[in-house]
Image (cartoon, rainbow, N blue to C red):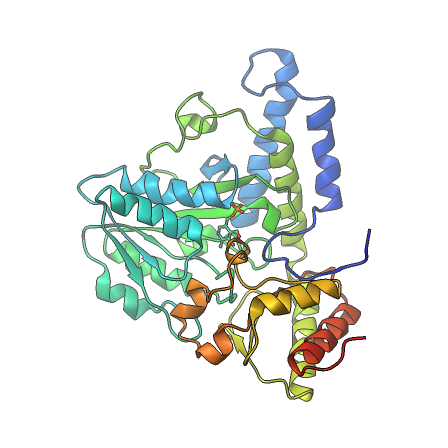
Length: 379
Ligand code: PLP
């Protein structure tokens, strides 16, 4: 395979080797259905229970507060729709204008059914302020859903404070932590969130599996009706190999957060330093408080999609923003919302690093960006 420099880790990550190996027995030898009463189902059932315990430990939750899903999209949809549908007398939702489409489209769908939704604006660095929530929250608000960290610009939100405001008004609080879990320490009790969405493939686990943390005692409608899996709230035969892989990857990532953060932050600084030294005209988007390695850059007078393809030809994989927006070269909803000048906005790319990236990778990315944006010949 052609050697590439992979720098699109916010879109997806490489599967952890240990997670891959932990998955194999559940795909080959121990393929029993965990819902069956016979002895061949005992080990898969135990594997599910063990995964629930280890995932709960990583976020300081209780095992029976973890509900396995097919990933971030499903977890977000469940949180938004499940809460709106659970109490008709108090069914308003508040979210932000920069959420992932999994939240935004779920909100649009409940709006069509008559459930009110309010969308909070953000500051120019992409922060949702406590004051903006205070201004719109009412006693009719059932749910406030604000992402832990933005997928395009990396900004981390003041989740604890926002959750406190929600609770003070009798509302519940959900956070889409898909970009954050496994990359920053998350403690659901300390944050006092009621629901949290996660997706395994963003923390070196397999694709198509995730979970929704639901605090004990919260009333929520089931996501899928059918069998009794996930205590009757999310029917469907469990993806045991995926769940085991997710638990292994999460445990490994959480144990390495501080080492990984130091390495990635060093790489991040080197990239920006190289661009500054070469006097490239760019803006780095997002807040100082951001997910390590999520670097949103807007190059003046450039086109993000052209940058993506030229870098691709040089073996460098980045994105123009959100993975799902990469088919059209428009300004993304997030870049629009932070109010970036159009001269820069069209030239936006997202470089997202992992602990596997090296200093040499960064030098090559910087060299390529300098060549392209300064119209130099490419060797
Ligand atoms: N939420 C955020 C913030 C994301 O970045 C993503 C994926 O890019 C999702 C939700 C959707 O997750 P999944 O790919 O597991 O459906």
